[in-house]
Image (cartoon, rainbow, N blue to C red; front, side):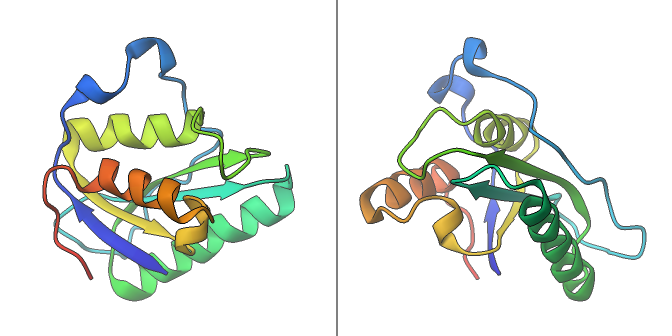
Length: 133
């Protein structure tokens, strides 16, 4: 699992017209404890609800084991890794804009397998200078 702490990001980098709710989310773990909100993100190139559900459960298990209070897991299913229009990603950034937090991904490939695009997406998360693990 990959985790990053993110401070609130200025909302100017995305328009309100592109904001859509996440595809699906998972709410908190009662036994987990952490200071910053923990959010997850999953992207799959092919629409596969079974695989999406398994990845969400993997994130929840990881967060519980690490003592992180998982609040939401955002997802984009059936979205190419080169596609930048991602409702779940936009919703994740919107929540980070308001409250900061930590982001957990199964792997960095869930951002993109394309190195340049992945770096751009990581930059969106780190504009406020978060701590890295």
